[in-house]
Length: 280
Ligand SMILES: C[S@@+](CC[C@H](N)C(=O)[O-])C[C@H]1O[C@@H](n2cnc3c(N)ncnc32)[C@H](O)[C@@H]1O
Image (tube, rainbow, N blue to C red; front, side, top):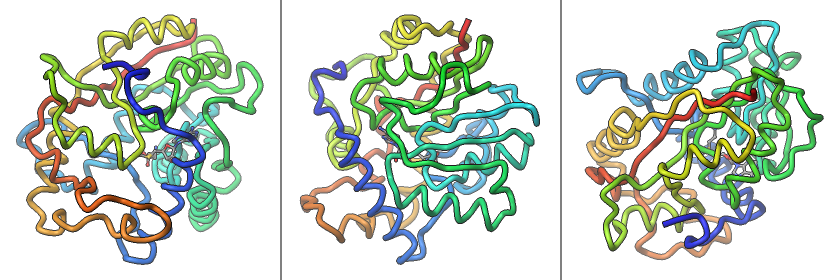
């Protein structure tokens, strides 16, 4: 299934969803500076979910190849956890953008509290039309954000435009693994519907990057290290049977059968890919 056959997310609605999820997580005590999956290097890794979340950012850091002279764009920056880790671990300057105003407010507060507001700046913006000049970043990171954007091609073309020659893009995205089932697993349907996402086609990804003006450096199926393991870890926690509190509040009319992380436990066709590309 391609982007066009799926319901395309609307950036404004995605922003409101993340506003609500952020406020509600702060209220119910589940707030986390990382809004992403974890990365477990090996099947026998005993890393906690928290450690695995930080490890995913470290996987990005290793592949972006940045240092204190670099300026990094965090595309879909959440509440700033990954961007702040890049600043403190590499010394690079980070600019993050998110379509959620509430996330941006929170990320800038966390940067100030960490004493790095001079090196980490978060701005409200839409990745579909970046406000930055051509060739203004040494690297771009996109942790689990492209799935919410209505046109991956447009976003990746914007990324190519704002990268310096030789600058790297590292991203994770969700996709449906082969063999494709005739009927998509209900857990994937619920994920896409309630978290306003689409799944990519890994077969198309290389062409997508090339058409955007980027040169592929590597593409990996990291499902076992990420989504599959996270769903299993979450399914072990009794709390996952509860719908995320955010879904019970605000103006969203979630159906009774709304998405729960345990819906994806053991669903090995819900894939996660890691792609590395550079602007020639
Ligand atoms: C799953 S969260 C990941 C957040 C962050 N990358 C992290 O790892 O903690 C998805 C992020 O993508 C952002 N996003 C979705 N669509 C966007 C768009 N069109 N423009 C900018 N940000 C967007 C959301 O606001 C949210 O911050």
